[in-house]
Amino acid sequence: MKRFQLMALPYAPEALEPVISRETISFHHGKHLAAYVNNLNGLLEGSPFMELPLEMIVKQADGGILNNAGQILNHELYFEQFSGKPQKSAPTGKLAEAIDKQFGSYEAFKDEFQKKGATLFGSGWVWLSADADGNLFITQEANAANPVQKDLTPLLTFDVWEHAYYLDYQNRRPDHLAALWQIVDWNIIEKRYE
Ligand code: MN
Image (cartoon, rainbow, N blue to C red; front, side, top):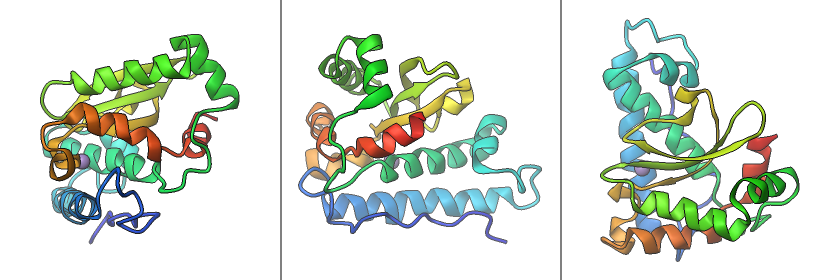
């Protein structure tokens, strides 16, 4: 039985150009994420995690099941947060207030987030997440880790695995991270924060 399916992208593969090319999206979604889904389905056969929701698997599993489940959760949050035509290009309301309170300003938040993404050694993800009181955190998570493992709610993430940018930006990870703000749909991030 196939427990998980490859998510459908909420946009056409070329919709995020020129920030992320059609080619990168096609490989990233159609090859990398698809492989994590196939791997996890195979590993779950006969395992005690077979019936658990994805987030619970990420919180409880280890080894290959954790790595593949984590990468599925991470990539679903990643692909869903982007739009070629974002409804909202900067945070507003309660999230904007929390960002100002925690980081000083939206610009200061972006600098800090990009810096944490640029300096993450090896493969991983940079995250904005929230605790139960609405306090915000920027964290670097290695490999397939996700803030839900720390009981935080993930809000925004940039993938800094080389497969996310190498075709378009080669070694220029900071340039890729700086460009991603253009396609973040803050409407979606605000819904995650509510
Ligand atoms: Mn990736």
